[in-house]
Image (cartoon, rainbow, N blue to C red; front, top):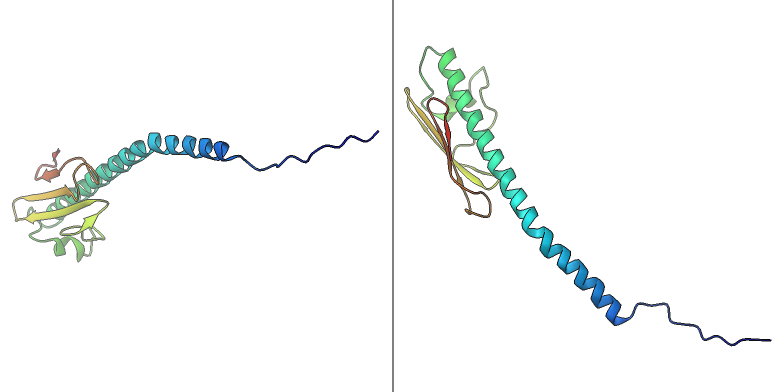
Amino acid sequence: MHINRKNKNKAFTMIECLMITLVIAILVLISAPNMLRARMMANDSSAKATLRTLAEAAKMYKLNTGGQYPTNVALLLNSSNGYIKENYCGTTENGFTFSCSFSSNTFTFRADPVNAGVSGTTTYTITTGGVLMP
């Protein structure tokens, strides 16, 4: 006895494709804000670390040169001690713009987010004494 079976189409139906697309869209909507927040926190951490590095370089310069802070960033870069390897002053890195102010008695380093709330959360400043302020 021979049974005639119809070959069923093995493709997905339009409804199944739409459901899969909907599930993927919902997952993206749920995860995107978390990824953006994590990126912003990483940028904040990077900015704070850069400011601490600049402050430590200025302190080391003072210790090695008789008690005065550098009066410009070139003194930190061009030193035989190599206090820092890269000039961050006046540049934008990881969503923050860095500015530097020097005198023989003080220093101030500042990191401003390029786009507050997107590339970083707040402006950070570190001054003589090494206190990092948000």
